[in-house]
Length: 170
Length: 153
Image (cartoon, rainbow over all chains, first blue to last red; front, side):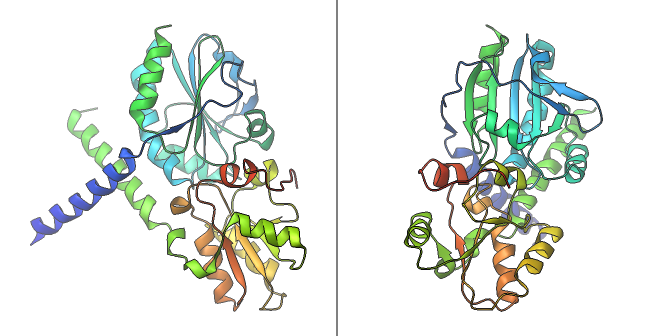
């Protein structure tokens, strides 16, 4: 009986998983594409600050997210893995939390063992990127600081990995 | 870290993600009769015949970037603080007041805010509440459509 329940639960979870990840990513090229990514300096969760242009020379995945955003939560483990896998080759993921307060972000970062810097975003930074009016939104920025891709909504990790691998070889 | 430990940690993370995905109150469970589409709300606002109180129950950072003119930010209804603010804002209003709730943070099925807000309003006895059905997000289904938008507080 227990085995049957376990198999059923696994099947349901697998069904949800493949339903979610079989949806095609919605990617578009907004007016910002190929332009220099708007620079910003934002406070880090753990103190100090991050200036985007300080990552020039690296491929940056700039992820606008929030702790209450379910697709964002689903993407986070994949970003942790991508940072671990490609960090030595020049990938820098930066998480920009659009939460209203840092408290839940602290908890989330510890819970998910986030291995890249997370800053608290602002409306001004969101507007500079064309308006972050839905989450998640991720921008891929090349080593010279130009925006090369924008992904809106839940996006399969393989799409990010393919883009990152390509940009790292340029 | 041992490979087995990594696998267990990965499975735990996946399970945690699934639980968090489906434990949230689902916007999809709000009855269709309590929803209003963006184009219908725009018509109501443009007609000027009705004057609904429009409350944003999602993210303040998103509200500052763009919101429906005249709407008020009350807080993320998925949090206790947001629900408290919502109750406080409406407690003195007549129970037949036309009120529209909206968020637009995420695709409809993933929005954690509108269902708790709608539940709270009905628990308080409000009888004329509509929830704005935003299928993708506020940017795509409102701003990009060219509907009236305001910025800031």
